[in-house]
Amino acid sequence: MSQELKEIKAQIKVRLIDLDMTQADLAKSVNVTSSVISELLRYGKGSDSVKSRVAEVLGIENPWAKS
Image (cartoon, rainbow, N blue to C red; front, side, top):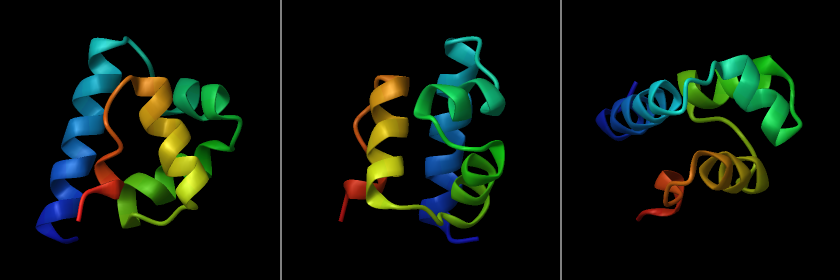
């Protein structure tokens, strides 16, 4: 796992805690399966629209959009 992905994962996990959400809750809010969220956090795999929607639901700037 790259350092960048570790930082993104940490940011999302902190935000989930702040919002008292689970990954399953996030998946429901984004309208995807839990495995999609798991793959996204574990490997950074996911469509741009899913990544954008995750950021929107969490109320954060899209961390994957950073260059």
